[in-house]
Image 1 (cartoon, rainbow, N blue to C red):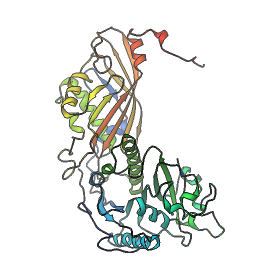
Image 2 (cartoon, rainbow, N blue to C red; image 1 turned 90 degrees about the vertical axis):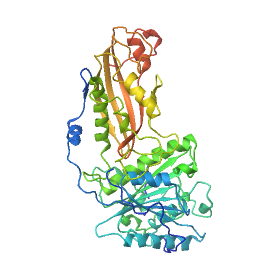
Image 3 (cartoon, rainbow, N blue to C red; image 1 turned 90 degrees about the horizontal axis):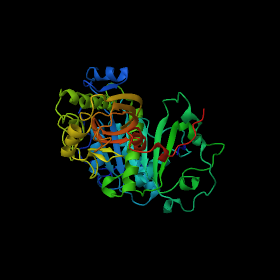
Length: 454
């Protein structure tokens, strides 16, 4: 769901502006003989690229209405190459005073920047609400924070929040900056400030939800603030879903991962992904992983080489970053072949999977062809064609099935998730009924089909 919406608060006290968890910490950088897999030329060039220059500093303010904050989130941002400062902004209940105090606290952090540096803000709950309001007040036509390059606002309010009472109850109208057309223009002006709004449990249909947004008037100059708002809703989740320590429900964890991907995509675009990004390009990591998997056929690498590219439970591998990067319980590493349930979720089961079940096992005729690839901020989706003559068991695809000497070809979708430069999770999907038909184990007449249109 996409919509479009842009100074608030000035008081910095010892209790209202506290840094936590090593504020402003800088994180450094942290085919076989019978298996053929084609990859793009650009990917190969990236693999051979010389090490990046010293990365530019990427400042990130985390702001919440609590005295401390979920360390998992702080660690993940640090792992992605951001210098993180936390502001624990405890609200007093006086909205006008609070928003002025918060604006003051942000400006003090902004004043600490060196010439040419920019920063982004990820805010939660009421501080997020105040910061959004600062960008949409019609009394000013300039952005309140000149050096801000992105604003991410998590659950600034809910549909039943008392902040919304007694405000304008108009229809689906918004301020002049609500025109979404410019979002989809081929060459969107890079001077626009991207603002993401992540809402839980409801749909933001009416301006009633946004008291600081009124019906456009003749003198409304909000659009001159030059920002674009992208509003995302998570109907199955509650406020707090993006903070791991606050929720363990499955729906919230799914929403948290989706929101994280959107946040990372926004931040990477805002700061500019380039050769000097502090974290290795995930496609380069993915290509190296596949090279290691395939090298296992010739025993050119140890069976556990591919596993070493995945995040170890509890901490990252040495060299990825300084210190530990805690993972939420239930997070990787994991590989799952969905139709057959083959895979692993611990270093031991993963090593067994790669050594005895996955690609190194099976017939010599195995061949993989990459058909398409979609690369996101922290995920890659590959569409691959896997073909072979069934002269040996393929444990992950046809477990327990004796060789049929049939030619089999299937399209496989692989979804890989990343944390910094490590693979966290892989899920493989394919049409198992089609595989069984080709292997002669399922009557084709039992598989529902539609008429193919010419």
